[in-house]
Image: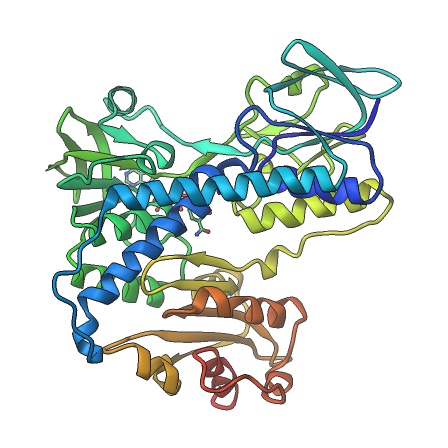
Length: 453
Ligand code: NAI
């Protein structure tokens, strides 16, 4: 009998299991694939490995602007993919080691919930059955492949790929068409543009990067157009052929030829075939319904990470898993969804937290919105020839508190947690003015801007 059975070993599951183990709960983690989930094996980490190689290559190509010359910089895509494998392997074994250290037992099989009785829950994995008094479901999500004519056939034949397959692609396609200009689409468009593919992004909305602040989305698009990426906006994919993607734009049917296609049009929670119906766990549009404490409708069952569909980000998953475990142990913790940072690891990077210009309008908030060039930072000028990065502050008018910060420009990914702390702690402009930031840094523009708003 276990105190806790965790189903799914991605960021939500492995982190929750580790925390639970250290708190003294007899914990079992059931994972059918490699530990680390999508994030570690076919998401966050592999893409960042690829993008770092691309960034080095891009810097090499533009090094003359900084007084450094190379003769014939080149990038070996296969070596990049090999290195990605090595990085992933190191991290997956690291997760295994932390499970051991926390006293968590790991079963490497797919698990199915069989039922519940007075003692707790029964989960089958392989040919064995396990019992636990509590259950935490962290089965994550997978790429959505909607019934667009020809798309499923294209995925089956390998012509179209999701994030999973494209990260193992050995040949750089001459012409890559990316369906969906969201986070995955843009990060992969960025990599393949750097390594020499002609990339076209076909996006249904009239802008890229989904909920990103519209001014920043435009700057990002401009940067990538300069690098040669083509964007078809307001273009809804209607079918996929054997060598092309067909879409509707301004009421007209158009087509773009492709050697390979990436499908990145969102993700779906993984709730099928795990036996949720055997214990009556409620789902809504495929995702497990949880309250703010990560509890499902069934007492003793929690759900964290992508599977609850609240915010499909690995760092949200970490926190949700921790919140679930803390609450199992008698706390009443919550996730502050208003202060979850988001990052797009393009070059330049985009990072944001809190309200956007659009959500301020939609919610009718009384807020001041102001953009500042990153050229206020000496370091930004030193390191970014021709850079057009900005930081945008969104300040509540009544209390002068920081409710949103948005950035485009490198290091944004590493700076944004500071802004997330300001939003989470509901800090006021005058309080940030009194903090000392290191100089010279790109992040100090945030502080400088507090004196101008
Ligand atoms: P997404 O939701 O970010 O973007 C999907 C895009 O596809 C949207 O802009 C949508 O308008 C467009 N689209 C949908 N149907 C279409 C059609 N028929 N034709 C043309 N365009 C269409 O989804 P994405 O990029 O697949 O990412 C999935 C999840 O993974 C996200 O929730 C994201 O949070 C997470 N992720 C996070 C990363 C990060 O934090 N850096 C990196 C990669 C993924």
